[in-house]
Structures are given as structure tokens and as C-alpha cells.
Image (cartoon, rainbow, N blue to C red; front, side, top):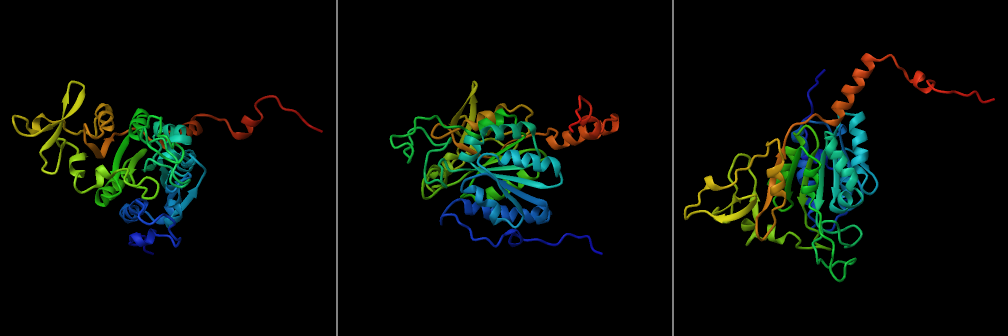
Length: 337
């Protein structure tokens, strides 16, 4: 009897459900790249689970021919933690949005990440609540006019990468929906990480916040506004690769190569640094002063949560004589007639 895995393709991971996203939505690109990544994992669909909360992104489990759980608002990280802890052999994805993850789900998100549960979080960031028709979200910019902020938002936006780095995330990355090659490779790298991987995908909502990322997707300006992070390489960007980023004291600044400035003067990316200082600095980059980085910000090793849980359970079983009945009956008991 053959034990070889069947050869799978992207179509094997596509469900029979009609996709109910608006035409032109950036979610389609993320879904397409996820389907392409799945066969590369060498894992059969029944060993993969997609868990989501509430929002446009949270329809994702219906569109994958795997197991899936559509949970409640903000609670996908809690459900996924339980699932992975008791079924450590499963490959688990949390699909969430900037509202679902960073508003009602903020606490769940940071505790999943600090525990380093071995699963993958994909956060779709379109800076708006799309499913409920255009209210401002935790990542909406100050002054942004929406249905719930007709005079402009007065809230200061959250930075997703700064939050997860503060929780000591072991894998942090960012990609963008228009660059499908980069997106697919980033998703794949996330799946290869042991521990919690977090990928922010800058995604366009063409109905309620169209053009939120135009400065990063418009052909005319994007090369001058995006910084592609590559481990061990200098931070060079621009249409002509003539710009770079270097340190000036404790701050970063943009410089033009030439006139005495060389690549050796620039910041070199180190995603494996044990301390998150560089990743934290990069997470704060924003236009127009600095380019917006995409790629892997940080990738370090730390034991995963479920590994520690099962090691502790095995140790307890081997070194104690307690059993469930003795625990239940270890204190005062009453007989009820």
C-alpha cells in the first residue's frame, strides 16, 4: 500500500462556495496566493484549519477546501489557541482584519503572540470597517472622514506591527495585495516558522476606502515609497535604486546615494537579531519622510506554547501519582440524600 501524499494543486484547496466579496476587492489576491501556497506545504487539506472572527476577511474559511471555523468578533485567536494546543499536529491559520484583530480582539491577539502558539495570523489592513459599510477602524488615519466620523477621525491610529513586536512576536512580516509574487512568498515564509507568525497585508477596500494605499501601489510613485526588506542587504529603494536609509543618531533618515554616500553607509537588514530594536524602528517608518517597508521584519526562535504545555503535562504524568478522581475528591465532600 502506497503511503505517498497525492500531488495537490491550488484548485484542490478551492471550495465550492460562491465568493461574496465586492468585485475588485484586495481580498481576492490574498485568497489566490493562499491557495497557491497550500500545495507547497505538503499537507493534506484535512490537516489544515482556517479560523476567523467577523468582517469581510473572516469569510475566508468558506472559500478554502480545508477545515474552518467562523467564530465571533475578535475571538479567533482564543479559539485557535485552544485548537492548536489540543491538536498540535494541525496547521492553523487565523484570518482577521484591522477591526476584528485590533479593536474588540486586541487583548486576544497580544496574548496569543506572547505565548508564541505555533500558528499563522494573517491580518488584512484596509483602514476601514468594510463589512458594516464604512465606519472608521483602529488603523484609520487621523482626520479620515467616514460614516462614523463625518467631521474626521480624532483618534490616533494603531500600528499593527508595533503592537505585535511589543508582545515579543517571533515572526513579523508585511506584504501588499497588489504585489502578488511578494505576497505569496511572504505567506509561505510565515508557514515555515515554528511559533506564531504574523503577516500584515495592506489591502484595498475599493468600495469604502478606495486608494488607501495608492502611494504604495501607483506605478508612478510606488518605487520611491516602498522599501523591500532583504536579510543581510542594505536598505536601498527608489525607481533608480538611488536612495537609501541610514541611521542618524537613534533615528533613521533617507539619503541619496552618491556624493560620498555609499551602500556601506546604509542600514543593513537583520531579521534574525535577538533584540527587536531594528524591527521596531522599521515598523515606525512612514511616508513621506521614510519609505514603507515590506518583507520580513523579524524572525527569531523561541519554544512554542503547545510544545511547553505538552512537555509540562508529560512531566506531571511521569512524576506525580495524582489522578482525576483524587483531585475531585481531595477536599471536603458531602453526601446528598
